[in-house]
Length: 115
Image 1 (cartoon, rainbow, N blue to C red):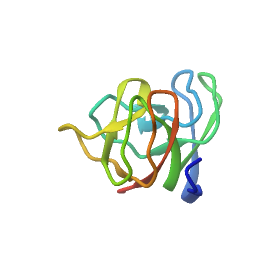
Image 2: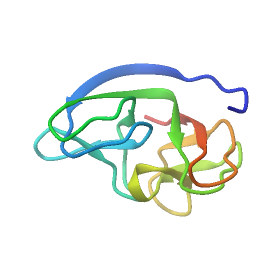
Image 3: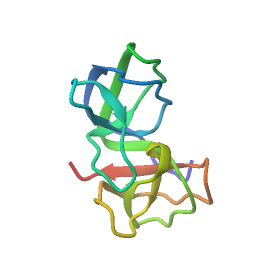
Image 4: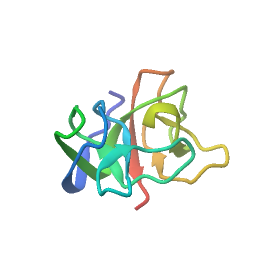
């Protein structure tokens, strides 16, 4: 895993507003539920567990492991990609910095969240 450790800072939970996979960027909808963050949008943290709609979704910020949506270089700025995956920032809202790299989609990258 490229010699990086996951160090969650704040851990909290919300009800899941949809089915959510582990290691995806999360935002909050108008009902106060955790949902997969919109591509190029903001994120409050990363899902620490897989949760079905209505189940408890565990969320963390800090240094977190996120599934990559493409190749990522260590030190790159990160934004939310499709499906809440981490991608190199190309103009969206910056949500973090990659501490490790990812060879491509489906790999795991350590991200230091900016919030």
